[in-house]
Length: 411
Image 1: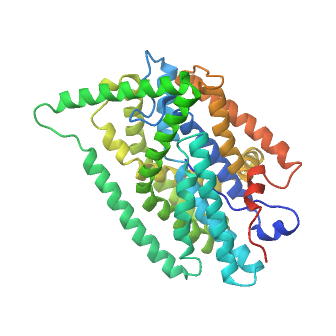
Image 2: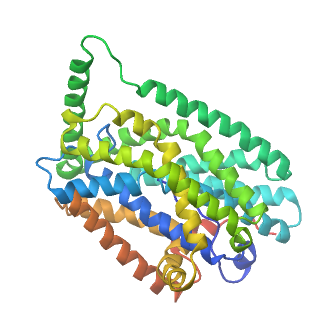
Image 3: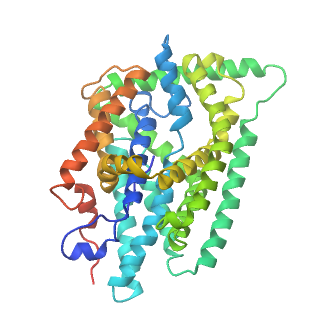
């Protein structure tokens, strides 16, 4: 799932091109980086088949708890936050560039450079490291935002309504397709399908954890093409989130959250009340399916089809909760998460490199249970938090953020 960001603060000429850093946005981005890892770590072992958490042989209660917790609290909760922040970053970056550059054509050129770089970086990332890359889709979808660069807020809102309607149609179609079919032979068909899913998951796991470099590369290519083509259905959802991020900057919801505390309290309440029950239903189904795919509940596919909506609701509650945080909680979150967020692109790509090195057979090939995968993810989080603080004490921005800024059109 997804980590584009506005260009980080740099020295000299690059500093003028970067928007002023807003601490709570960095904290949000750091939280999202770590949440994404909790979801992505499974696919380094199990690939991208229909069994999202693999087929676990004789799972312990810790293993079931790990699946339940990730499905409830993380799955499809953090890529919406990244997409929202991508839209906010676009608005902040455009505002900064408009103040610095001589004319609007240069602003468009600078932003096109950014999206081309994300597109190329995403393709290399997906082909060489991790097939679930989202930068490719972000880079491509970002070009749609350029059409709204000079638009008034009224037009942005109208575009938001249009993309929102299209997204709801996609969700409704997904829900309709997920409804269980009745009639004679329906149970047998579901049983045969579950057996096929198990076989696919075991085959993918064997390739990723025990295959040769050539076998892993071939599987990664196949998965990358499938994931990226499937991500086209994500575009309406991403555009809704991008546009919400732009509106949140223009209206001050994100840049001055204390002035809009009542709004964020309402967002938190609605997100929790509407999002938690639906996500609990999915988490229970996911834990049951991981323990025994043949006993997967019938409602599981319906709960998964609703996950883009229910996950976004809970994601909104996370954002609101963090923006409303005060005192020692806010200070601790800033100390540990803001440096990670300032280097979010570097950390996202480093997570993929560490996942390959630690979990796949072409490197260390650690054999980890679901609970073990969570320990690996937590260890990576701790390492990245410490490393980000160390790096930013010596450098103005992360290495990939610095590389992304090179070659950007200048005044």
